[in-house]
Image (cartoon, rainbow, N blue to C red; front, side, top):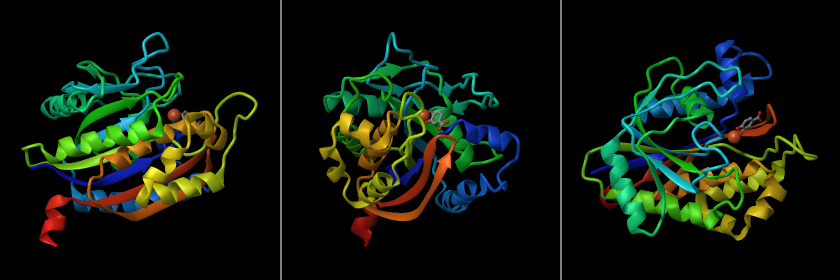
Length: 286
Ligand code: DHB
Ligand code: FE
């Protein structure tokens, strides 16, 4: 049976890719951010996931404003990156797991999520930057199922809906027959706004509330509307929807084993968390 080992959430700012290409990890600006990944590397080396479900938002590489699904699930055997114009190296491709993708798609549709299924899907910096941070300088040891959530063109799905999406995927993973160690990834955030009068907006107090609630009380965050969220976290702070879905997919007893928060990285409040998930089997054994 598949086992959900835990979740990692990470900022996906493209400038991180440039810093890596220019080997700036130890520069004073970057060090407090990159140091926050030491524990992530230790944890991943110990936990050895086989596959990762990645909740992220596409920024115009695969979907554009003309056709923008609310939820899209990849069902490809490989996902390619392309130049998005950020001046960062094009990333290597990531292998997919079509059998697992179709299992999740069937379960989601069965649960009433009218998702878009993508047998061909480009992945942008919102997938490649967090993966590069998690497994630097090595071949990525996981296959992925990318799940794209619209955080770009309003109306966006609610926080409650994204939590429910994650829960549906979590239940589907627990019923998957293959012995797989599954990692759940959520990318983006925390507070940031890239354009308009409030460009550069960051809200540390609200970020701290989110970091606390996402661990033990994600339901508490569902009382905020998307418009509340834009006001409190900035126009791009809504990328937190990916964190909500990640948290929803953690079905068991969740423990935060690592957290790093550093402002700013580019225009963004950069945050990294690692959540362990004591799943059903582990709970029964205890
Ligand atoms: C930045 C943040 C993002 O989430 C993104 O997708 C692109 C850029 C930034 O802070 O520069
Ligand atoms: Fe983004």
